Image (cartoon, rainbow, N blue to C red; front, top):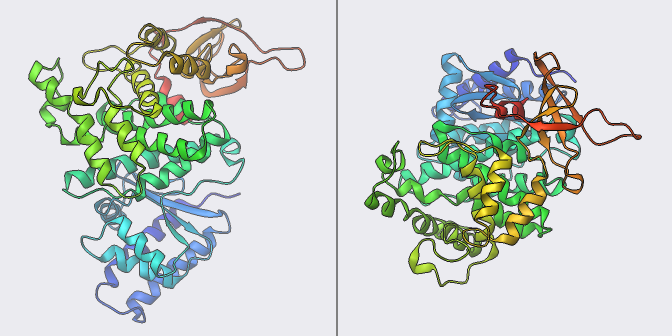
Length: 455
């Protein structure tokens, strides 16, 4: 299958921007509107010869159309990216059969001022437009494995954008729409139901410049994976995932000076920071189509298993297990993340710390389940094999916890591989490729393990 060319992707973006501009001044039948729309529909029609769906949007301020990234865009593409960012439209999907009439309505809605993405797609739905969808749809069965996890990576970026967009709504004084969050939760839960380990590696990505967004998504991944490992049903998985993505949303209401303070917080500052749980619960309670148990979990994710945490006034409440699941996921991601007041622990060391606070701060039963899920060598662990190669654990095998799937990143002579080799250490036909002999500290090797989960 051929990839969509950069030239065609750029032409499509330019035509879409031209259409957005022209619909503000001319009717659909006018050549200035009709011609770019018809050409755009034709380009998409050709693209559908190569792809069942076309994905486009903005990631970290960069416009993309399928695999084409426009890091140094021309003025038209840059303007389109700004327009999409302004409407919090970070990802969308076009389905085969999209018409120039569909594109006209879409361009008309994007041209309207103060008309956010959720209203754009709500209006499209009302008008019967079914070939233009918000977010990136889940790929079909088998695609994630066949494409090296592309579906997981796309969904991870969608989740980051959904959390970012939700917080932007709050900063703007709006009650955030649940549409973005619910869309990405459907994708994350579907991927996790197929294999609860699918997205675990992505939770090792640490973006210190965007810590709150990144941490929220990582907690969402870890929490839903644990819930799936424990056999919970789809609706509970959705609520667990939603709570993870939104658990720290109250931090948007905390003063930036406190939130971003490089050193230890003063007593008064810590008391203010503690308010993020109840502030977050207040926000989530106002959002439509969010189950009350999510609000409760957001309120109680720092309450602690022995009820010595905060908010103090809520210690006697009967919290759902979802709050305890969030606490386990939140703790693991925090321990494995570099903060100004804390060095990052390696995955196995993080589990040791969690075991020590089990039955006090954390539920002992849930910590045990989390350990089982992560396996003897948790995802993100760097190991040395008996072949003298260095490998990264990318998939645990809880039932045979020593037999992880790994990516070999340094060969036996100590040379970094340009393209890591993915293989399973589980025996096959009585033979095994290699065995793990010891752990390796990635800091001593100057290795950023997170980048290998995007390769």
